[in-house]
Image 1: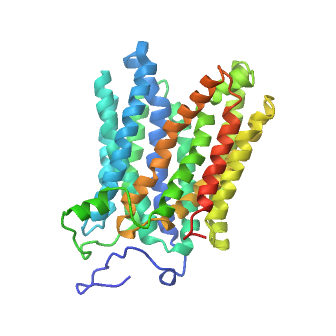
Image 2: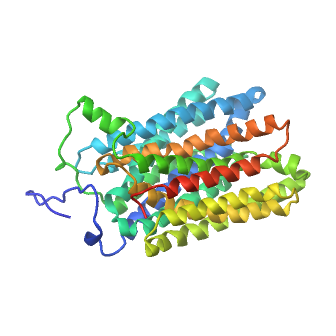
Length: 424
């Protein structure tokens, strides 16, 4: 890092390989802990405690209200991710560009979850849940931007692996933790809010982001607005290939996961106890394989100096995994799906973020562009159930067609990634 005339560390948009001989493990720890502490509480509430809260407030309309909350949240989260990411890129402060946002997001996340917990009407639940999405996304995009700002390209696979480890633990562990509070829903939501409060401050203390005050300030002009708040236009071919490749791979998995219970009951023909048994087996397999691969795939990616090959391998494994139940409706095919697709998603979680960082059109707008790439996650959560429902409807209630279609989606996603030119 160079120093200004005031002996102040000056922000650099990127760190070059020769400036960072050793992997900055602390950046991985900061982003991994941050991901664990925002994603775990979010999924603990969203997947477990929110439906329980809705059942308490409006039991007769619970399905429609949960759908309303999900739809509103997706719209708000998408906009907030891009707008806050763009604002984060523009911030000039003694605490840097990202730190003020992740701390504000953590505090706001606690406050809005307490508000949601106190809501006694549907409209208040919707409003408080939407505000929660805004503050949550004040953590997400700026936190990811640390990987672009502070990690040299040659270390991004390793550091993304540490981030992915926290992400995977949060993804699976948050729901397990949330389930422990089903008899005391209000207490559970408060606990999740308190955990969220630690996400930004812990990451900020570990990273110790340098001041961004020495960076040139940008005045509001039309060109500045286009650069910082609009989808990238120039030098963005690889960026969009990564975006849509990621969306296809994620859609393949969310379509299966969203209809997993119905697949087990109507296609595999299991009774209730069988469904519970296989949901547990599949979830455990996917968690274990995702954790193992999230630790190992990133360093391997750095070693072979390739992002596209691991991501394509991940897409291929997902395609093989989701295709297996098409060959037989025997229960073992769903176990193979959990094992093979879990391996693929573990590799994908680990290396995909490193790939994303290397296709960004402009390091000056990293947080905004990473927010746009996050549309692949939110978009797939919408597309997955839509694709699955369309297939089942067209086939007059048969679930068979989901498997080959999702396998094809994963392969298309992998091929789109292979078409990226500026990343090995």
